[in-house]
Image (cartoon, rainbow, N blue to C red; front, side, top):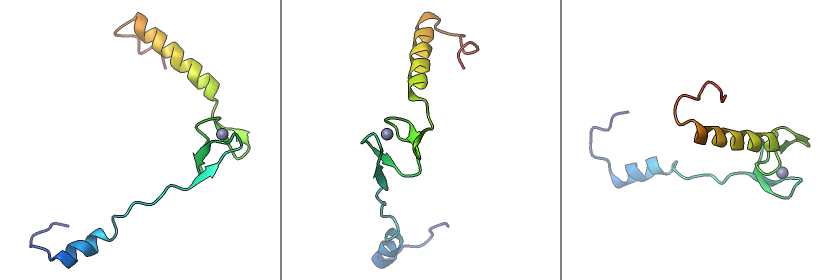
Length: 81
Ligand SMILES: [Zn+2]
């Protein structure tokens, strides 16, 4: 919608009445960390009682990727996924 005319203060306030931010729904994980509901835990990778994200493997991959990036500066994109 294109705003063409000057708005009254009430008009502006009415529009901004929908701009409030909502608080994220946080739950406590089995490991004790707070996590966003319907998302895997960023601390342990669990979701609904089982490990959904293998954080150990992910960290290893990140370390390997960094080590590879330091060796070859440019043109090693094909070997690292
Ligand atoms: Zn957790």
